[in-house]
Image 1 (cartoon, helix red, strand yellow):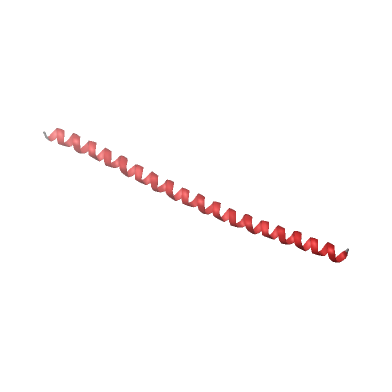
Image 2 (tube, rainbow, N blue to C red; image 1 turned 180 degrees about the vertical axis):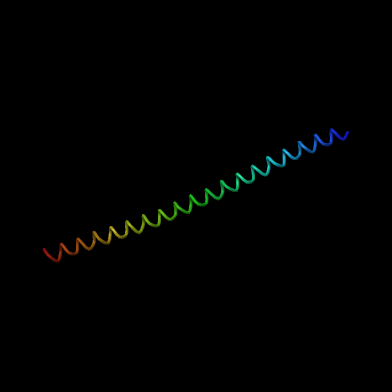
Length: 69
């Protein structure tokens, strides 16, 4: 009976160990996904600013051409 209990305890320890490993891996995956999404949002913001800047430069160039013409 004691041997069976020890075997059951070892089995439970292994099961708990696997759950902890899965939870840890899941947490890491969530953190990585959050970092990835944050980078994507920042890239979108920077891209939008670049497009607005380019548009402003084009507008300025068009205005300058009209003035000099």
